[in-house]
Amino acid sequence: MSRPARPSRFWEYFAVAVVKPLSGLLVRKDWRHGERIPREGGVIIAANHLSWTDPVLLSHFLYNNGRWPVILAKAGLFKVPFLGRAVRGLLAIPVYRGSSEAAKSLSESQQRLAYGGAILFYPEGTCTRDPELWPMVGKTGAARLALESGARVIPVAHWGAQELLPYGEKKPRLFPRKTFHVSVGPPVDLSRYADKPPHADILRDATADIMAAITVQLAELRGQKAPESPYDPARQ
Image (cartoon, rainbow, N blue to C red; front, side, top):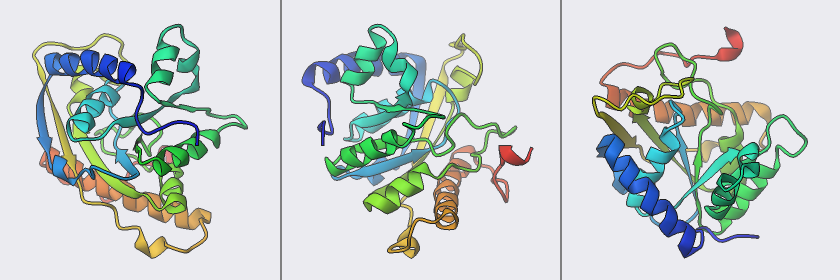
């Protein structure tokens, strides 16, 4: 095990000094059920993905609720001057997509969970492509990590980051000031998959349960009924 669950005091103080004032400036907060975030032990925070800004806004939420968020970031960011040093110092986990090293991120995530870390995981793998911005069909990485590690999965839904910076745009919409809504659900019950080999069908079913739990929280935030089945970009 190569690293603890929290960064050095320097990098933690640095991130808090930047993120909390920036988040407070950009958005109002509507945070619900933060008490459902476990304060100790390895945990997977599974969230929907709407905007490039939501990892920062969610990190603020998690930190204020007692957890240091361990973020999975594109491997290319680790090569950017200063930014690479910062994300490495903040204990982000590099994600190697489309390569023979893709499994490394899950292996390192398991190590952080063993240290008691809180892994912020986006099961969709990217910002949703659903036309109405509901969660898509998820990828199986979070379910595999949960079943292999035994870590709890806490579903978190958010809404509002897409108004600040819609997916695909580079210029934020600062005015009028947006509200960032967050709702935390109870742990996803994956007990029916316990002691079963992680075959493809098992992983898909467990992933569907995780995404359904996130969608329930998002429907509460939006005050709307979710679609009966999630958007699947592979079938479009």
